Each structure stands twice: as C-alpha cells, then as structure tokens.
Image (cartoon, rainbow, N blue to C red; front, side):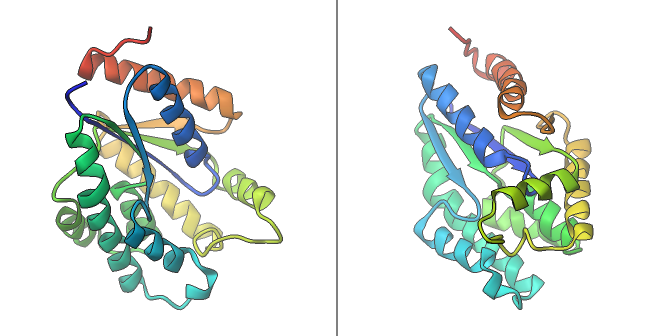
Length: 218
C-alpha cells in the first residue's frame, strides 16, 4: 500500500473506543496492512506527559484555556512525530481520539467558541484531517456506568468525574460533528457487546478501504 490512511476512533467515556481501536488494528494487521496505533492525548513522550497532567484528578483547578492549549500542544507534537511520518510510510494510522474530541469536549463540553477551536486546530494539525472517523455512540448513563464498573476503588480520571450535563454536551458535540461531515464521520452504535460493535466497525472500514484503496478482505 503506497498511500497512508488515517482513521480515528472517537466517543464519550465508556464507549469502548480504546478496545475497538485495538481490535481494528489487530484485524488490519492480519490482512497484511502496516498499522500504527496511537492515542490522544499522548502518542509521544511529550504527549504522554501532557496526558498525565490533563487526566489527573489533582489537576482539577486547571483552567479551560490551559486545558485547551495543552491538548493542542500535544496534538502538534503528535502530528509531527507520529502521524505524518507513518502516513508518509504508507501505513494505516489508527488514533484513539484526535481533533474531533476537542470540538466535543472543549467546544461543547467546556463551551469554548467553536471558531476559536477550529483556528487553533488548524495550526496544531497543519490541516491534517482523518480519512475516516468512527464515533462510538451510546447513552451517557450507560457509558458512565461502564466507567464505574471498570474503575478500581473509584479510580477515575478528571474527565470521567465531570458532571452528567457535561457528558451529555460532549455526546451532543460528537453528534453535531457527524451531522456536519457525514462522508468522513460514521456513527457506530456502541450499545452492544464488544464483538457486535467490532463487526459493525469492520463493515464500515472494509467498505471504506475497498473504495479508497482497492483493498479487499482475503
């Protein structure tokens, strides 16, 4: 495969996006495609340091402005050091969150002006958009119940501890992203078991790769 492909997996807390991203990466490797798995915040040494700051409950006094700028700094490093080089090598890049998360979490969740986020994202990404974005969608109460179930002694991160209203705005934000860019963004019903959701994702990704690259499942 000469042309790299950029796929992002998005969703509210508890949607299963990290699990589904790993399953997708494993499946694509099984077809012989070279795959780079990464995540935001994170993906690089600098990014992982920023991630720890952003997710730590001890950072609960961090301002919305600081949060946004840290995420964008992380993204700029991520694009330059991981995503673009992998795409230039002709790999499939699968990222657990990317720019759409900023619109959902900081734009809708924190109520930062979307135009401001759009401009700053352009700087951080150099205009790089995913070829395909999968938004795992489910009811907020269900997602947060999953988070609570998997947490150890209430060990949840700063975003997971946000109010129910915040998480509902985030879900609304993701749905708005999907409605504005239906060709790039596909909504996946995540209110099911892991294998069923995985099969839904494979159907979307297989069709996408066949159309874009002529890649067929053997």
